[in-house]
Image 1 (cartoon, rainbow, N blue to C red):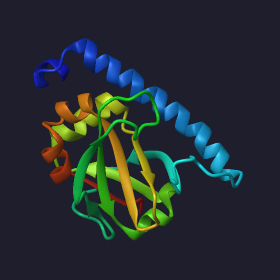
Image 2 (image 1 turned 45 degrees about the horizontal axis):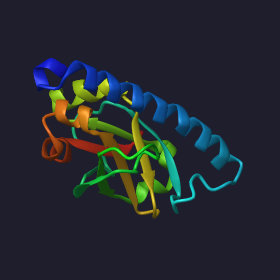
Image 3 (image 1 turned 90 degrees about the horizontal axis):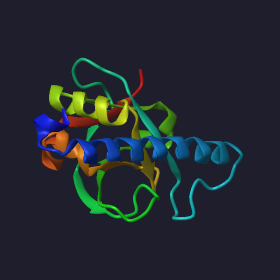
Image 4 (image 1 turned 135 degrees about the horizontal axis):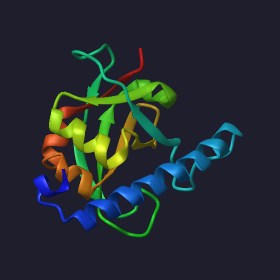
Length: 157
């Protein structure tokens, strides 16, 4: 997948390992949140992995990203460029019930390969959800515009 997308294999592997460390650290944050402690000091209401759940068609409550931007610190690690995709949706009040999917086979395969199907989700308000995605996975998915137009979040029904 990395070679097909024109990404050096070493960079792809580095991004994949970094993402796995992020997902591992999210488990620690979730444990703190379940104890009633703030998930992060940055003002986040929640941060946790958003799992994949395939759905045919667009289910009720779905949302595509309205915009994206780059942020060096969205994953909470050393400064590196990552993409933040913003979704306006009230269902983020229960992030345990959020899932992602894509209507693009390339995006789906890239994210399943790069991130194991678990995307780094977080929010600052109850009417949003955000995804923090590394440049390697986004590049393999044909870039941020393709991700914005082909990835959606939805309630897990």
